[in-house]
View 1 (tube, rainbow, N blue to C red):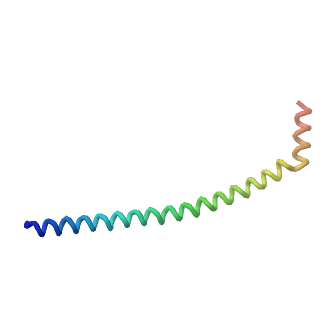
View 2 (view 1 turned 180 degrees about the vertical axis):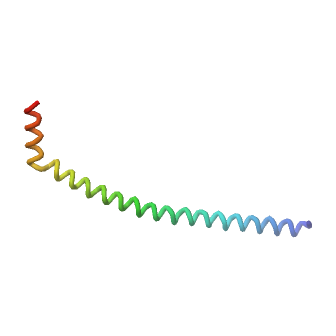
View 3 (view 1 turned 45 degrees about the horizontal axis):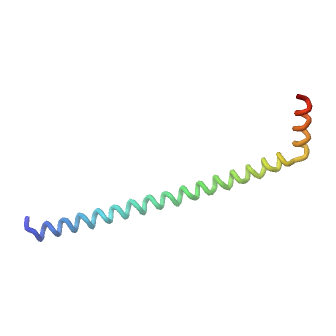
Length: 73
């Protein structure tokens, strides 16, 4: 194998490895976008549940019930 063939082979392998590396990075980033959307939906659901819990805890009947339970003890 002469020097020119060796240099051409090294350049070709380097370019191929760089392209494969970019492909893997792009694939990973696309997966992260799907994960972000999934987490955003979960966060929205949790916020809704927190709002319901806040309404229950700040309700006057809940406070009265809690005070009565403390008096019974």
